[in-house]
Amino acid sequence: MDITIIVEIISIIVILNAVGAIITVFHEKRDIAAIWAWLVLLIVFPVIGFMIFAIFGRKLTNKKIFNVKTQIRLGIDTIVSNQKERLKHGDLPVANEITNNAKEMVNMFLRTDKAVLTHKNDVQIYTDGKQKFAALINDMQKAQHHINVEYFSIMDDEIGNKIVSVLEERAAAGIHVRVIYDQFGSHGKNKKLFQRLVELGGQVEPFLANRFQILTFRVNFRDHRKMVIIDGNIGYIGGFNVGDQYLGNSKKFGYWRDTHLKIQGDAVLALQSRFFMDWNATHKIGTVEFSKDYFPNPNIQGTTAMQIVSSGPDSDLEQIKRGYMQMIATARKSILIQTPYFIPDSGMLEVLQNAALAGIKVHLMIPSMPDHPFVYQATKYYAKELLARGGKVSTYDNGFLHAKMMVVDGKIASVGSANLDIRSFKLNFEANAFMYDKELAQKLEHIFKEDLKHSSSLTLMTYAKQSLWQTMKQKFSRLLSPIL
Image: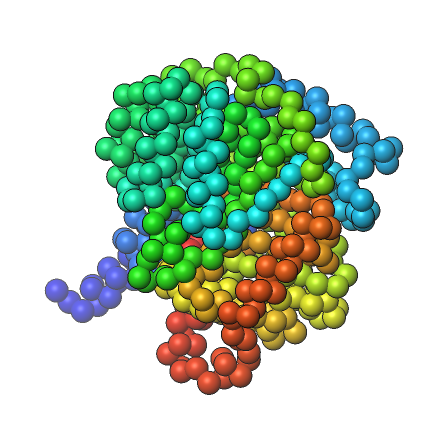
């Protein structure tokens, strides 16, 4: 074949591929960073790129997944309307030492996520997997009516089987047991693990599996929430999944440093509401019939005001990301952040850099080792961007840091499942507790300072000494950061 004809054929293929890539990417509304990332992938890898896009690139924001009647039936809408009105008139107390900016944050969550503000919650903090699971198992063993479980990962290993064994015991005793797990996070091998639990009357569902089978090309959207609700009185939320590595039993990662909360008080109502919305969207037959047994009125006299905030690809409001940004905007002295993945979009990066340039202490802590190579290289790239504007960055050296925590001025704090990365902002279903309590925030601040004793400083000099290959890996990973 004439070489000219071959060149013409190749040119036509390249042009058609480029046109196809542009049409595909612009078919749905996206931010500019994601557009460029997908264009690079589709144009550089013509066939493979389109296959990857078909599975991982399509959006959900036009899909009505969750039944809003769940919240209406719980009276959430009424409570939210009430609280909005009280905020307008300045008679909704948030905490003893709350700022007007924090009240604005409360209002934002009421408007974007119907996140009810609750008071007098008692909160216990767990940073060690063995302690967290010991407490969880103890509470589940005492359940009298129901146990609702939702985790990204429930692994078929020692701790996974132990948790399931407790659920089996309670199900056999007549307790209502419901479990939601993410197929991707649990490696899709949970049918055998839960077989006896189902036989005993427990109900187990992979999150939205009937909607997200491989052929529906929606496997990129993951239930990253980590919640347990027991008898409507006790709630757990945070970063720990269910697996032996979260107990520090992994040779690769060593000690697993995470942050999880045990909550008692009215905030458990919000956790329960979130779980039932997820359950009713996931469960194939019928919906939960609500009763007072699911929503008792606990007489807890704690000190923490909080909102349980959720976000996911079913909405383009990015509620948790907005919460993080609002927290940062209120800072006057310090912003402490722990996250395993630091891949902020341009808005998040700018607000952090602005805070650092304004003289506010911005201190980021990330792991010293990767669990996902591309993600870690992108994290290192953006950590350098923060350092360049006066921020501080530390790497946690005593194992793997998986905590998702932010504390501002020792007054406001957030702990949950959402990392400071684009995936958590746009692609994952997440849940965080935003807390307005000086005493609790200072406890979390103290934990951060204790972790610094096991950390090293990452500096611009560190980057200056790294190899050219390392620099190139970070820059390339940054190009793909909007779709990692």
